[in-house]
Length: 74
Image: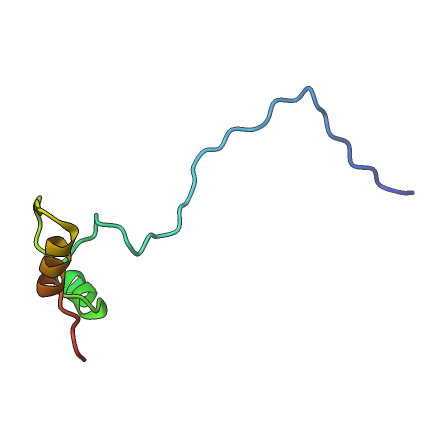
């Protein structure tokens, strides 16, 4: 005899009790000095200063960017 699967449409769906999420390697909650130094070593550009910088022209901004973001030579 063939088995037939029956789905009751009137039956409400079950509740989800909990969900596991895969760990996010870029999460900032687990920040450590070692991880920060590892990121700096991995990136080709050195630290960029924080803040708001105003320039009179795009050329001036490009010159400042080239001066302050030198590519690290490995």
